Length: 153
Image 1: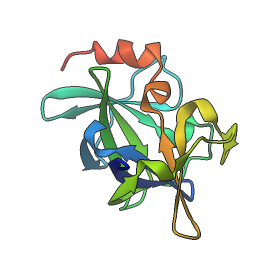
Image 2 (image 1 turned 30 degrees about the vertical axis):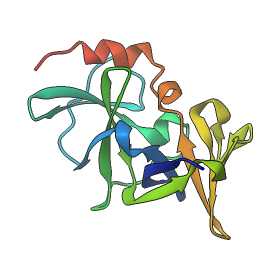
Image 3 (image 1 turned 135 degrees about the vertical axis):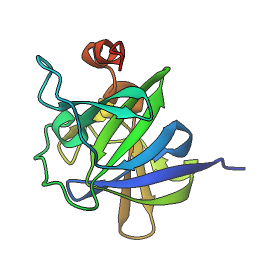
C-alpha cells in the first residue's frame, strides 16, 4: 500500500512547489523584516514572530530566479528543519493536498533553473500539473542562516 503525503502547495516564479506539512510551522502575511548587514542578498533579514527571531530568505533569490513584486498574496512560510526555524518569502501559498508518494519522480538535473540538489522530486498531478517538491535540508544548508539563528530579540 502506498504512503500518502500531506503537502503545502505554494507559488514561486510561475511554478508550483510543495513542502511536507509536518515541516511547516506557520504561514504568515508579509510583515516588517529587519535587514541584517553583511548577509547574502537572498537573506532578507529577520522577523520577530511572537517573540522568536526567525531568519527570512527570499526563495526566488536563493534559487537565482528573478524576484517578483510583493503582492497581497505574498506569504512567509516558516519551516522547521534540523531544529532550525526559517521563513521563506513565496509569491503565494495556495493549497494543502494529499499526494501519493508513488507519483513523485526523481528530478532532472535542473528544473525551472533550479539545481536538482534543492529538489526531492517532481510529482505529476493529473494530466498537466507538476508539483516541484523541495529538499529543505539542502535549501537551508547555509552557515549564514545558522549564524542568524543565534540572534536574540
